[in-house]
Image (cartoon, rainbow, N blue to C red; front, side, top):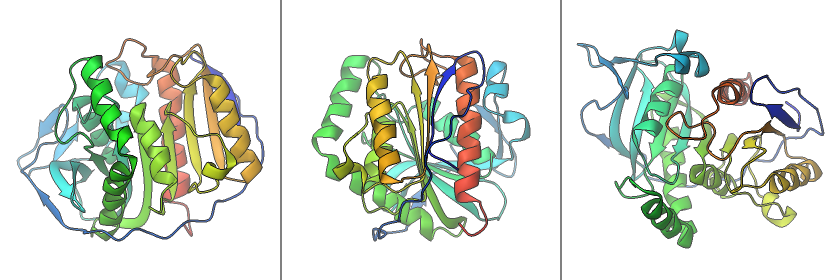
Length: 301
């Protein structure tokens, strides 16, 4: 998987333009309590709960094609804590072991959209823990969302500690392998990067239009490989920052893929948002699944 940056129209799949390749050296894992306590099944947002407590993820209309939902397996899900961090855990319903993903919400908080995305990804064969960095609150307007996300950014070490504890806790679950990635959108995309810059020892990092660092001193700490998804018309994360981010990763030899979708705005991959771009989202989600499969399931990983 080579480092690359690609401009992609929202109506067709992007053309890959290879750049340099390398693999980042993982850093030491953070110790954390691996205990899991949870409430009864809360999963499949929306979905049908079967008599045995499992459920089949319901994805309808164009979203079924966008999120590759035709072959989703049954899952179980619950609101719980992992390593002392609250969140929403979704996983395949069988007794197998699977790679894990720490999912990080947008600035709205851990809402039904993020829970549904956790359900979908779990249906593709991952143990997904969507962390709650807002202490149970979900914003209903942009003013409150800005306040909540600002509070987290004012105490970055606390947020990283919570996410790192979740990473360590996931590795201790009997349903997971030792492979863990982070994935976040918007505010969560920036937090996904911050987690990768910490000592959480991630195996892969996915950033959907999150705030970026671009300097070598900061990015040399990153846990690669990295997948970055961005829009050319994003006013929150300017494309100039994306290109600087990509160039620095090239210079550092961090394995990465960066895609810029032509004409797409910030939050273009949120089906409930006004900037939703279905075709760009379909392509980005396909790349996300391929990236996670290659980095977390590859032989020897």
